Amino acid sequence: MTDHLDMPSSQTDQARFVKDSALYKEFLAERAEILKHKWIESEKAGKDIGFERALLDWIVKHRSNWRDRRRKEARTEKSAS
Image 1 (cartoon, helix red, strand yellow):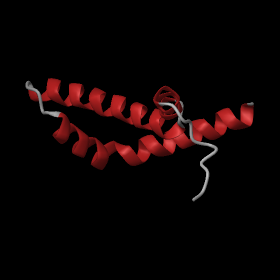
Image 2 (cartoon, rainbow, N blue to C red):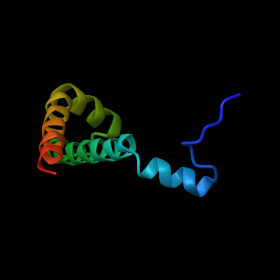
Image 3 (spheres, rainbow, N blue to C red):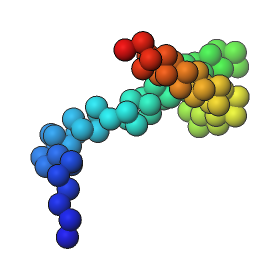
Image 4 (tube, rainbow, N blue to C red):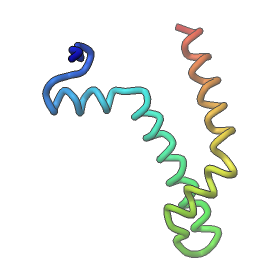
């Protein structure tokens, strides 16, 4: 059995570890973009298009460019510091 020295032990510490993780922050940023897309497309349609439709539409139309832009911004921030 291996020790997991990097993993927090308490539930509070684990929750903090997740919330501070880069993966979780990316998830939240992507979710915010999808919700913004849902709002814009729902306004255009004159009705709520639903999260699933907005998600699929955003993935097909915008995700690749959004990720590329995020990576470039991260590299710029990293080189500036």
